[in-house]
Image (cartoon, rainbow, N blue to C red; front, side, top):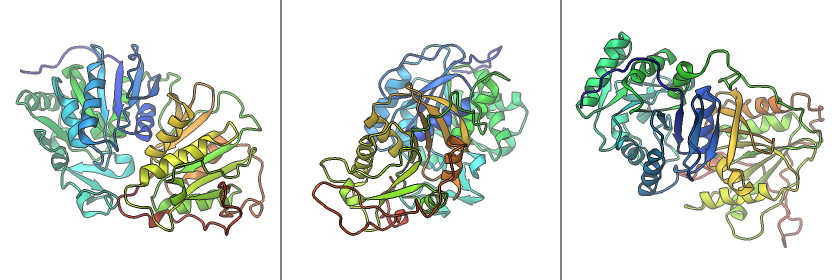
Length: 446
């Protein structure tokens, strides 16, 4: 089949698929269209014209076959004229090969652009680079059980691909559109090099004239490029790195609960900055979280900011990471206060919201890259952020954005105490040490 450019502007009805919640939120705010995030994979009402529906398929941790089935079902429900974009991890993690094959099935074509320039993740000659270093030469996959793929093509398995080099991406729009169309007509899926947002803009501008039957796959960077084309200029919709003010004052009696469920080494320093500014911190032992039984409890400041994290200083048993996250979610759901939430780590965010019964989020803005501010149907604020994103001041910046007028609390009153959680039958044993999330065994990223 020969794919020809079509006349006119692409329709601005978008269905975006993500494999975890933090990625879904990143995509939703990048698209700059009114819309919603649905915690799937259950079917949702399709997006209306001018709207984006972002579906968190929650497939990152599933077996590859099941993940592929869920993707196929999600794509099958897309209405005619809908622009489809599949959000992928910028480090090529997850069930990328299986999901890409399922996503490509039945499409007129598939254009792949996995660069994320804002995070220093670029693609040259079909290889992902982290700040100039090839992905396979970094330790970015230190927590993965499989070897790092040496190229995007390798990560996509049996999917037939062809690299579109940087000079082709930076050629004229007509030339790039023609090249993409020719490759797809030959049964290949173009993998586009990109080092800047302008490169991703060029990919979108060249792909959309090929029609909505051609699907897109890439990171939040590609979603942002799509948003710059489809998002109405000047409209009152979320815009990346433009956090919107609250639409109502925060109740003075509503606590802010920061849930750190990531094993990234930077989490320790992020927590330290937040507690240094007056937040209260409890680290719940990983071993106890992984056990069945009543949820662990921890003290929450009903008028202030509380941080809860996982103390894995004694390590996490192989294969227990998901049970630890589930235990953390149950502990958060048992808090006797209606709190606003900051959730780090896609798996943690999804499990917490599942346990609380939240099935839909409305994006409001982005506090910093990847830290997305949403509201629930009942008006609570939820900020999600991938575990690997953000510098040491990330959590403090998020807290200040959500609590700009929070009264100062002397640091010596709410320092890191390592409070022992009130576990039934355990009494008041010795304090739990502060968290040491960097000591989690390889492959146990929460």
